[in-house]
Image (tube, rainbow, N blue to C red; front, side):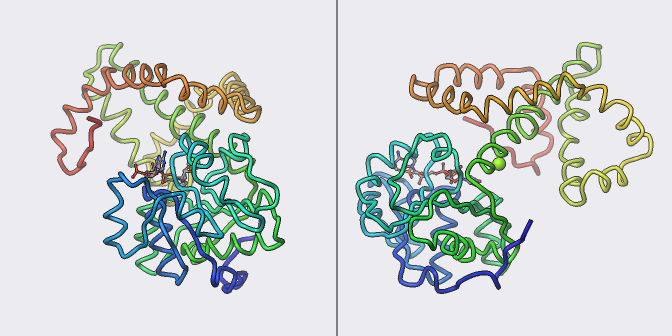
Length: 333
Ligand code: NDP
Ligand code: MG
């Protein structure tokens, strides 16, 4: 795998290009500001009633309706939520995509699963910084950068790849390093990671551990500390130095129990389920089910949300976090 850095960038690739950033949320504000500070010609497309309109204006950006921004630009970056992208594309962007223009995304979901099918005479690329938008902006201002991914879905002009790399460079990503991927790989690994490990896997494991201790008669507060609160300490070590560094930092007793218990929990059956989940992602079944759920009003999603937030671990956690105001927990309203 090649890591792309500053020396691989055609720094003139975006010279004179009019860039529209649609959306001014987590990613949108960071892209707009970093690109502007890198000398790019940026305009932000927002709904006229957007609460973020004034924020973008006072940051010194040009702000206009999404359709105007897209029409004016030759490169349009879609930074609205993935569940809204298709509507935004159909309402404001599709008609403006004349031959030779470029349509960019920060996640491959809508293009890979064909919820958005751009005309074949435009470039379609992905530039995905590997961090939340606020971190992307913060590090850029400090003179550093977050790693990024680029991918090309359609190369109508012949310069899609070098333009995407130049865009990642303007975001500050080449200061860390940029990796080339495909829309399929970015989308499928992203969905799998969040379902099997980061979100679905971890929350289910935490909840099951908590309930096992409580059902065995231990105090819920103790179970909360051991199964949820301390997770961050372990994850921070893994983040800094991988699994070996984490195991080096914990006690030998913890490390021995890690080796003997872990494989009994994540068994061949669990791995088979992971493969089933991956198949559902690859086939598009997950994506279609999720979009259908949204289209039909999101009732099941809401029911999941309500069920999950009323679990005992959540009540116990809310009380315990009162003791720890330094956590600055932001509870959902
Ligand atoms: P946000 O939820 O933060 O984006 C919200 C913005 O989208 C707001 O400005 C909002 O406008 C606008 N918007 C929402 N709906 C519409 C609509 N129907 N019409 C016009 N504008 C609309 O999104 P993110 O920044 O989280 O995500 C953007 C993209 O970046 C996604 O593809 C995501 O997968 C990707 N990404 C996100 C990362 C992250 O850390 N968040 C990391 C890497 C990639 P208004 O102000 O009017 O509400
Ligand atoms: Mg991800």
